[in-house]
Image 1 (tube, rainbow, N blue to C red):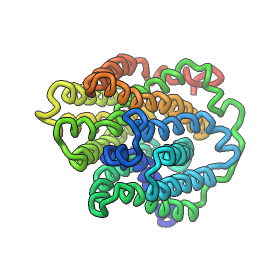
Image 2 (image 1 turned 30 degrees about the vertical axis):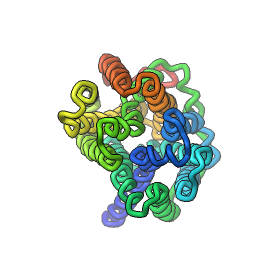
Image 3 (image 1 turned 120 degrees about the vertical axis):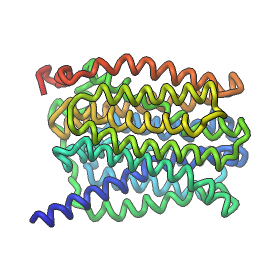
Image 4 (image 1 turned 135 degrees about the horizontal axis):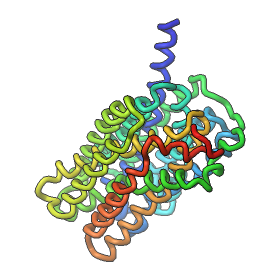
Length: 397
């Protein structure tokens, strides 16, 4: 029985990793190839920013409808449909140069990613009881690792074949693998949520809104860098491939932080110290990008990557900490991600607008610094003693 249970746990851990690997290539495979895509599709800076913003917008909107998603599709069909959307979007990207169609694939892929992201936290809370922080760290590390792999591999594959489409098409393969694996797992079918367990139950809760704002603003640097980091360094004379390598390096440190910091967080319910370290690392990194971008770019990107990796995992764990029931906790995480990703979606578009307005990205880095300082001040509101404020009936959890 012990061996059987161990195999069962390994199977679910592997499934969680494969799911996570599919959630960021739709964003990071585009960024290092953005100049080639813009030239072929005739998209401007703001139009190109939509290739990053639209998926994130979908992530937010679908998360807010997660109660309906779970009730109608369930964990099983919802995640399967999400993987199918990602697969189809990557397949279409491999055979088009039309800007409108590319934006359509961004919407389709965004819906797919969103379906998986709103169902995964509840799955983790239920399947990995007692090890939620560690499991969320593994999931977050896989998510970020997939993004880094795409940023590094896509421009090289595109260069090898002489077509940027090849760098986007290849990501249908891990989606196909994940779909095959998922269809063979004993997932849960559709089940209606109990009263007070939907996203709408948190709409009037001040703590839920604070968590959503915190998730959104502490993580918006990721979407900004995915959209504009290669372009920033191309302005400084770097190649698109080198810019993609910077994104890959950032992801390496994201993965390290996503594994290390939740492992440390597993020992206590106090998250504020680790979250503060994560935000300060980002502050130093964005400050370096602003003031000395050419002097130590690897250091600045390593600091930002570490901070972002830790913030993503820890802010989700912070949300899950507030409720014991897995389904209610999953809906709270959906609420937090929903509004958080809507905030994230604004970051690439705002960066593109500031780039066209000022001719550079310095204003964007200043905006990131302001957001991080505000979130650092907000961090100390989240003491473990205050977790009860999230309860839908006003009592302690």
